[in-house]
Length: 210
Image (cartoon, rainbow, N blue to C red):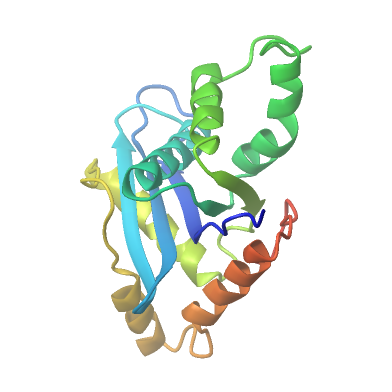
């Protein structure tokens, strides 16, 4: 029996925490650019969320959970690639979580930080066929930079989107090009490359150019 091919979604995630690590309540945000193919072409949507007292690591986890849950409401099961500059998130879900779960959610070094979020992430990942890969942040990757801007805005203004909303990426990219940035960048081609790799069954490396 042929396996039904799942639709592919690529999600670019970033997180922000203003004053991360300082004493007191540090506001944070997470942002996501979601890409999926439709009959009309590549559709893009945004989502973002805020928390009044948090950390970068917690927002990285919260952002991934939110996106996977939202996609499960909008679509049937998907093939999802989540691209993040958070090594904590990507290395954690790919390398740490299997060991923690095998030991009954314990680790040799003591209690697992953000345990409830890690468990919620695992439950959310199970809604799809999901992979995570890391991309270096603030290195000129336009979709990562855009997700970063969403996260910072959410953190500063403490705003959360009403689910998945129309994306501002197109206008953001045009504004960047007016400043002579990303002039040769083709966002649809970059999505198509990842879409084809996922559709072929490729396991994306932990660190990938994306």
